[in-house]
Length: 265
Image 1 (tube, one colour):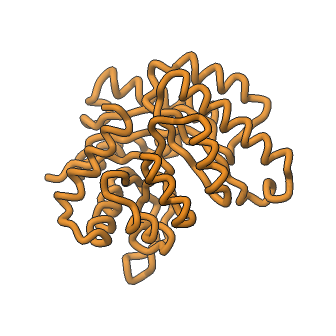
Image 2 (tube, rainbow, N blue to C red):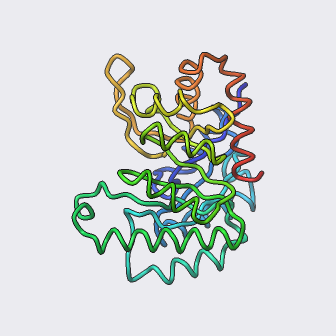
Image 3 (tube, helix red, strand yellow):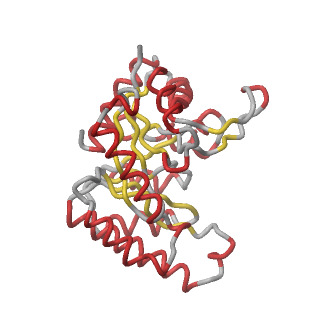
């Protein structure tokens, strides 16, 4: 049976987590990278990862890897110093720093330069922590692809994954040239932006994910919409293999290797 790693899930938001992880393990998911968005999420995901390390029976044998970070859409100014401190205090448990980045698509951000500057500062502070402790970064970027990439390069990060990349191809080419990864999830089955990015990126620099528990608006002819769980990484694999013209087993082998290299496992 094919085994897969889900490189991006928000396990702190998943309802009935024990059941979901058991179903995912049964489907063939061997590991999940649990990324965080704010201080509350970091605390919960640390708890989940710690339980998994204490007893894999808690997760039906599925490994949990941990991402600590503040998402650009979840910045709570009054919590920032506590969030930075939490990341550093628990850096030994963290496999990556993420989900961090820039996102100027939100209505409350678009015309607010102070909020944009706050996002930039939060992003840079977390990149500095990642650089200090030599951790990979999971990068969220929307409407800011060029600037986000340039800030990552400014810190000369060794490993970065531009999660669910949907930006311009010219910036994608620079991301790839810099040795970074791009990822996509179940949306790869129908999203023109995701399909364009993954079709242009070499398999050696791509990852697959689910972004659980995101709702995906699959067309009716493809079965209709659904809320993702880690087992839906197999939907991502299916779409990936078809797009790349590869056997699923061959694609899975390389994608798993990429995931292990990125996370450092």
